[in-house]
Image 1 (cartoon, rainbow, N blue to C red):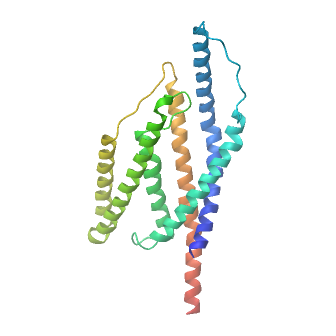
Image 2: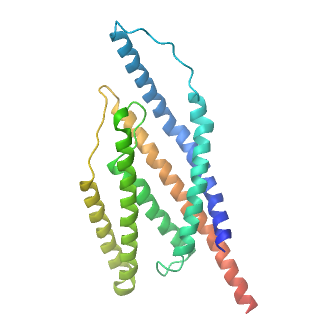
Image 3: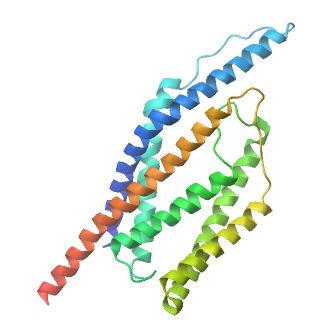
Length: 252
């Protein structure tokens, strides 16, 4: 059973990666091009201002921009989608029947919502994605470390919230459990936000609309991945699980 779910999860993740690539190429890559153009203007301005400097011969990039925006982006999203779908299916196999009186579709949708919030929305609220030319080279390591620390904290907070919801669901009902769990999730996330330092690096003259569009596109990629996996895998898992259950009942 787990192997069948894993295969379906990876296939669903690949489909989600394809849809996410179309979205990222259409809405995200134009913002990257604008950011790179701004970065090139900054480099050219610095070179023109430095009279004593001798212009060095530019080396051809190892990977061209066209390759990055097409095959490179597609490969990355397909691999990420397959890995995400595989891990999602394993989590589904563990959670199915354990998080409340919901079926396969409901379990998949709840897991996808939790994953989108904890891995997509929350980290981007504190440390949003930035296009090229935004951020300093000497803070990359710190920004990356803080981002993954926040992801780890968000996952732990989500697990705690799910455990609280599971306990309260049976004692006080779904409505009360949902309200209390949401409050617990928000409070714990707010504590994590306050505890972690804020990093704000904006170069002078950079168009804030480019940053905004880039961040919206990044959030859209996460939304597409989790929505396609959550809804698509849920429907596929339901057919598999209900089909096997019907077969056992007919055999009995």
